[in-house]
Structure formats: structure tokens, C-alpha cells
Image (tube, rainbow, N blue to C red; front, side):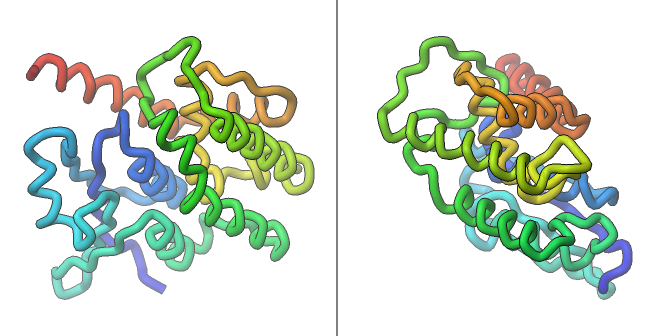
Length: 223
């Protein structure tokens, strides 16, 4: 196991990059200091990301090796697994094997699925949109997500306000989805609503949102 590695997280826009948010929250859960390197992928820096990321995508976690070289870990799921392995005390995955299997299942689902939701309701952390048009497929996916949250809270959520009690990787992966519910004024009920409110109230989520607001203000001033 590594001891206090030095990390740099390469991210895109805090307002728009859902994948960056996931990795950033996972690092915050580890309770370690890390640097952040930001690329504006909606501007001229889009070409520059190819020098910082092996996949030309964000996020990328750069891990300092003892010899001073940096080892890149890319893709949010790979970053999450790397952190879980090297920061076991943070308990990023649930301890119970069935809860852990469910957490991995729903993370894999959001990692590769919900295509209609991504297309019709892109992440925009700052915006608040009323009467946003939703396709039938998007509505079905939103209902399915609410059922996931309700089920996880009911079966595994004892001992905390999050999907598996304490905040973990699953919450990191669904944080951008919770953000979409708020941005597009999509109603929730019961346990799903309580979960979304708890996640939006989490200190790290508030910190990301405040940084996104500052970032967008600076972008507007430069325009």
C-alpha cells in the first residue's frame, strides 16, 4: 500500500464536467491533500488536454512516484478503484459484501448507461431550468434512478444519509445525477428526495458548486 502519495487531479469545467466531479469527490473522501489542474475544454485548451491525458479526456489522476516521475490513472472508475485500494481506512466501498456488490453494480450502470439523460439533461451545476422538455426515454431513466436511490437507502442506508449509509464511491458517481435533478427542477419523493437533499448539502458538494460559480464568473469576465 502506498503511503501519502502526492496527487494532481486534472479536471475540466466544474460547471459541466460530471466525470471530473466524481473523481474530485472521491479524492475528498480520502482526506488527503491534492492539487487540481484545470482545462477549459470549451475553449482553446481543448487541444492542450492531449498532453495531460493519455485518453485526451478528463479526469486524470497523476500520482507522484518516489523517483519524481508521475504515473497517470485515467477514467473515473479506475481512479475510484485506485483510491479505494490505497486508502482503505476511508472505506470508499461498503464493508458488507452484498452492499459492496450493489454499490459496484449501480456505479457500473451510471458509468456506462443513462444515455438519454446525458443527452437531454447535460450537467450544468449553476443553471436552474424550468419546464425543461424531457423525452419518454429520459423520464423512464429518471424514474429508474429514483428507484435505485430508494432501494439502496431502504436496504443498505442505515447509519447515515447516503446510499450505503456513509458517503462513498456510489454517491460520488451519482452526485452529477443529483445535480441534474436540481438543475432541471425534476421532482423527487420520499427516500430519493431525502437522499438528493443530503448529497447537495454535503460540504464537499457545496465547495465544488462555489468553485463552479467562481469559474463561470471568471469565464464571463474574459468573454
